[in-house]
Structure formats: C-alpha cells, structure tokens
Image (tube, rainbow over all chains, first blue to last red; front, side):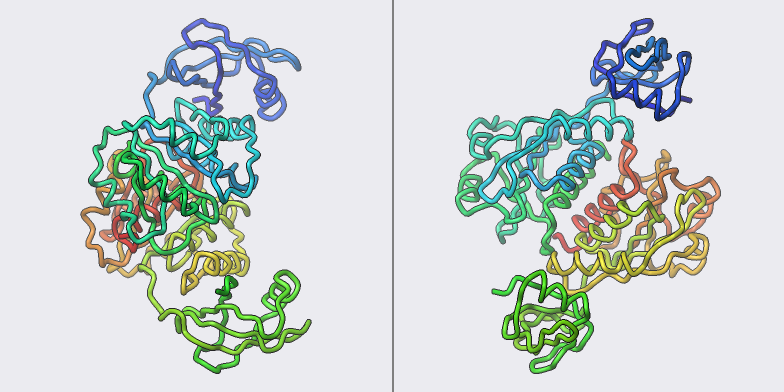
Length: 242
Length: 242
C-alpha cells in the first residue's frame, strides 16, 4: 500500500496523465527516492483518491498515470476559520492544524489590534496542502487573501453562523451554543488577535444577528490555541466526528 | 494594573518576602527593565494570586514583597494528559497548549511505536510555567518523568477514567462519550505516537474497565493535534468551560 499521498491539480480518472510540479518532482525524486513505475496515491479535491504510477521522473519533468480509484470524493463539513494574522510560526501552525481539524476555508482578517498585516497566502496554502496530504483529507481548505474584518462582516451571508470568541460575561459556553445549533447550518469562527477585539468591533459583531459570542472559559488562550479548540469542539458536536 | 505575572515557589501572604530565581531576575531586569518599587503579580499554585513589589533587583539577587491578594486559589479540573514523547517542537507545543487548555498533569509514556524516549522534564516544566503565567492559571501542571505505558496502566487508580484515542471502528465519538460521563469523575487521556498503539497495547487497554476508546473522526490527526482536540472537547463538555 503506497503511503505517499499528493495533492495534484489535474483531473483524476483511470489512464489520465497528470503533470507534477517542481516541488513534487523534487520530493518524489530526491527526498523519497522514487522511480518510474513506483506507486503513490493522489487527490485533487474533486475526484476522490486514486492510485497513480510514476511514468516520468527527471530533474525537470514528472508525470503520473492515474490507475484505480481508492475513495470517492467526500465533502468536509462547511466550517470556515477567520483569524487575525499572527507571527510566522503561529500562523503556519493555524494553517496546518485547521486543515487537520477539517476547516473548509481559511480567511485572515485584519482587526484593530492585529499586530501584523502581512499574510503570505502561498506559504499558508503550502502548509494546508501538506497537512491535507498527511491527514488523509480529500480536499485542501481554500486560503483567502487577508481582508478587513469590517469588510468581511459587511458582505457576510447571514445564512452562515459566525461564532466569535469573546471573553465577556455574555458569551455563551461553547458546548452549549453548539448543542443548540442546527447541525446543518454552515458555520464560521472568527478569532481575534492577542489583544482581542476592540470595543467598536464587539459592538459591530453584537449588532449582527448571524454573529454569536462564545466562550472558551476563563484561561486566556493564545489566538492559535483558541482556533484549534473552537474547531475541535465544533467537529465533535456539529461536525463529522460523530 | 501590572501585566507581568510570575510563578514563584515561596509562600504568598501579605508582607512575605519571596526570592526570585536567576531566570526571573534576568527577565524582570534585562528583558522587562523593571526596577525596585515596580509591581508585578505572582502565584504559586497554592495561595492564589497576589500583587508584589520588587524590593531588590541586582544581577545576582532579586526578591519581592508580597502585598494584596487579587484572587483566591481555585482548582483546575482534574484531567491528565498522557502522551508518547515526540520530537522537540511538538512536545514543547504539547506542554504549552495543554497548560492553556487546563491539563492538571502531563505524563510522557513510552509505547511500542514511540520514536523518541528522551524527555527533558525541566524544559517541559519551563514551557508549562511560561504558559501558566501567560494564560492566567493559578497553577502549573505537574510534568512527570517518562514511564512505560504498561507500568502506568498497571498502577492505574480505576476511579480515574482513561480515554485512549483510537482509530478503530469500536471507538466512541468523543462528544458522545463525554456526554454520558459523570462530570465529576477524574479523567485522563492517552495519545499514542504517530504510528498509533500496537495491537498488544490495544488489547491491554481494551481489558481495562477504566479505559475507554474514543474517536476524533476520520482525518488522521498528528499526535499533538489530538492532544489539543481531546482536551478542548473535554473542557467544553465536562470541564470548566461551562
């Protein structure tokens, strides 16, 4: 059974030939020391998972021949993660862990107290792809360009519940909020930066019928920890960990 | 309001003088540039949290005078985390996040497929202390010396439920297992290494009435992600996030 699993762009169907990109060529050839004829598995987020045989693998060119399907495409639960950009290590960790925890979309949002506004979407996408390859997902969460929180809220589709992590007394304990939720409602979380949301941002969120303040207890979690905790709780009660 | 928060060893009561260790002296003096007369807050895991005034702060000696109590001592929920040692970055992350997520004890356990058996208890303790200082906890989880899983199981007090993360079909979805649990029962999690538990280990665990297999869904979580997810779900349903 092949253990190497790659996310590819091309269409997957038996006998299709799919091109590999330079990173994949380097990985298969120089890191894993594979050769033409060796088998890997591939997915593309649309066609499920397939066995594939390496056809050509030179320094500059690599392609694979798709063979039998292993799994049909499934869908991840519809849950987005919105987060204030953090320093490099932490934001990389968010992309990796949120992918493992089944987020379907990653949206950096700039807030009043955000300390950094530079987000490298390509690097976050690479982290998400690597995590998806390792955790067995058949899809990679979409990593979006950073946007201002106000703009995201202004354009929000109210059919999607937006849970915001809040330390105020009125925030509902997370498991209670999820227990009440309609399990089929698309959901999202927004996690503020280290300094939390500003008073203006809290007022803005409180005015939105689709936005619900939730609490993760009294210990002050780092922003990335709050992201993991919220996604894990959601998957366990509303998502596909049931 | 002082924002610097330190974990100290000495007894806390108004007018007590508490010695600082060399790391704390360096931190207050060289990193935070504090001086005698400045105020910090301190906790020791027994006496709650107090304001304290720096009395002496030289290169080699530092002590503080304890003033008013800010918070009475509380107790964290009684939940332990047992985990197979991982490479350095990951195990550091476990100590930090498990502390934020309210674990009361951290026990490294060597299992059949554990890839590394070296555990630096002092470094893990330092990570746990730093996380406790930052997250507002009034206690620091105890970091224990690594032990063999068999030995830990053999000496287990059956009054404590031991949830083990398992990918088999018989494992119960995590939120369902917690919903049924008596909320006052002391709990623990054991998370295996990347290769999971061996067949022998699974058989051993399955024989223990106190051990319950739980599932975190079908995506294959990294060991450290599984630790965070299990603790977060437990706190939300059985712990103090209610």
